[in-house]
Structure formats: C-alpha cells, structure tokens
Image 1 (cartoon, rainbow, N blue to C red):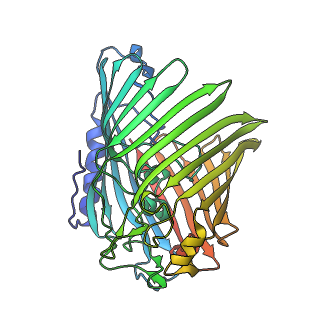
Image 2 (cartoon, rainbow, N blue to C red):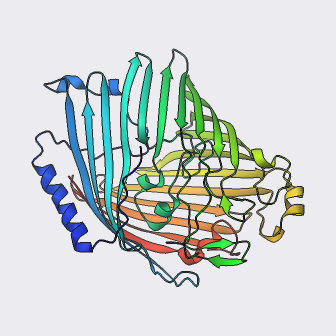
Image 3 (cartoon, rainbow, N blue to C red):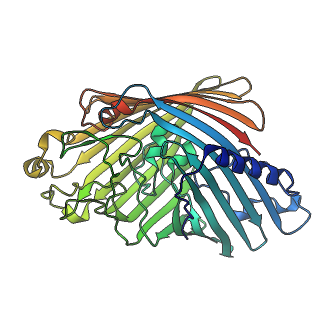
Length: 446
C-alpha cells in the first residue's frame, strides 16, 4: 500500500478551508466518539480487548481527529541554509475505525500544508486490517506504525522507520515514529509470545537531507544543505524483524532479531552516492521493578554485513550497543528518568587506518547520558517536561524543554525548543548547533 501524495503548491487559505470542512463532516457523524488518548506509538490493544458488549450492534465504527497549526523558528542564522522557519504548517487528522466480530479496520491520515517547503501533502499514517485466524494468533496487514524496545528516545533493537525531521522541528512526539507497509503476525503462547514483521520493501528513516535542516559533511569538511536535497540510493529488498517475549515474576524479558539495512544513509556506493548498507541486528532487553521505580536494560549487536573486517571506509563498522535506565516518581506528580548508553565500534584501529577523514570519526566507545523530568500540575492538565542528551565523549548536548496545557477535551496548547550545543561541528549533536529552534503548536480535537 502506498500513500497518496499531492506534491503541488496550495494557498494557505485553501488548506484551512479543507481543515474546517473536516470538522463540519465529523460534527454530523452519528457514531462519532472521542479518542483523546490514542496511542500513536503502535502498541494498540488487541481486538479482543475491545468491549463490544457496550454497543448495541455487532459492527462498531468511529470517526475522530484534530486540526493543528504549528510554527517553529531558528534561534540563530545558519550559513548553510537561508530559511529561518523550521516549522510552519497547518495539519488536519482524520481517523476511522471499524470493529467487527471477525476483524477490524483502521485508517488514519493527515492533510498538510507545509509553508517551509511551500507544498501540500496527504500522508497515510495507518491503513491496516487486523484479524485473528486462531485464538492465539493476531495478524495486522497494511500501513502501520511499529515499535518495540525499552529505550526512551534511544532505539537499539527498534529498526522501524523514524522521522528525525519531525523530531527536530517540534512536531508532536507521535511523528517521530514513521509508518511502514508491513505484515505483522503475533503468536501468544502460555509462556512466551512471538512477533514477526515482514516489510516487503525497505522503508528508511526520514533523515536530514538539507531541505529543513543542515548537517555536517565529512567530505566537504563543513555544514551543508544540498540543493537539490540529498537523495540516497535506496535498496528495494525486504526487511524482517522478530521478537520473543515473556514475563516472569513481574520481570519482562525479550529477544530481538532484524535482517535488513542501516536505517540512515551511512554508506557510500561506488558511484559516490549515499546509500543504506546491509545490516543484521541481534539483541535482548529486560525491564523490572526496582525499589520505588522501574529499571530497564537493552543490548544489540549491529552486524554490518558488507564490512565485517572494518577495512572499507565507505561502510560503517559493526557495533555493540548497550543501555541501562531507571525511572521513578521522586515527588508528587514529578517523575525523573536517567539512561546510560554506549556504542562500542568494532575493528576501530582499521577504521582509523582506512578512513579518508579519521579526524571526524567518533570515539571507539561513544557514551551518552540522558535525563528526563516530567511534572504534572493543575489536575494533570499542565505538563512540564525537560529531556536532555549529553555525550561526555563527543562533548556535545541536546536539550528538549517543553510545556503543554490541555484546556478541555478539545483544545491543547504546547510550546518548547530544540537546543543543540557542542565543542566540534562534526559531532552527533554539535553539527546541529545552528539548527536550534523554538516552536509552538495549537490543536483542536474533534
């Protein structure tokens, strides 16, 4: 299934007229229900968890959605990109759900006018059918948002597509997870559950490409924003992901596997074009109550199949990745969470020896610390949040302060910032110092 894309320029007033029309349609829908707590991270409830007894008929359908306006702007000039706005859009969401005794259907899409790119677009985020051929097997077929793992903004075994442009520009967190056209089967046994995901055509991350944000180019030795935008050579092969999970005495255990490609264009082919090299990953995770909080740990082995010796400078080396985290409510309505993350690059001596730009290679043991504070106030209508990344090896950092307020069941307001800093322009966060921005959004749910 593919998303219908409208790549033509729209006047802003036409986009807003379309948004208003969606509200009008929804207001006369006899079967409309609110869906204020929809989980857009892909861990939807199973079909048999839906309370069908509360409805008068076997078939249930719902319509919901929102309209939203967002604005974001750089806090300084960027020598590589002239556009000061990082977010300037009007967006309307419409979601349709249909439940039957034998199956369910979900469709979710956004119509957008993006003033930064001066274009309109329809995005299908979900178009999926779910059914259960047996009592212990669930199937989900179609466009869907998938996720697993234990990290908070850190993804080790989760190789499903992400949208980093959305994350850095101030869109809602749900847009960090991008959809993919996949088939997911889940088997629930007495002791373990097994999930298997097939994506027939590889779907990469929506990485920075020079359209909205600049990035550091080791070849140029400086910040760049290519025009036309960076257009990597994408493989057309399938990807496979699997998870085996169980819970014993309140402790969650999981094993993971993935066969596919690096999700970002970290390789260069023989024609000098950015590409996505082949990648297998194998990992495990654990999540357990500890003291008054929750402890989690996760590891993953990144097997860079095209460069297992580490001698090809155009292909990234294999890595061992590990994290450990802890979360606890430290005061009334105040939660704190901390994570330690490590990337251990294999065959590091060969990497430095054969690299064309050894001065730009990251440390053999790249370390990262994260800290999250979340404070709820005003009967949990007001949420203060601060998430920080700090790398003692790269000597750079990324801060995400935000505050959101829910006026009522319909109106929501949010504002925040993406703040980057670093000693060097080539490090992971330091390269984005000129992309630092502040943003604000207003949303009406219907």
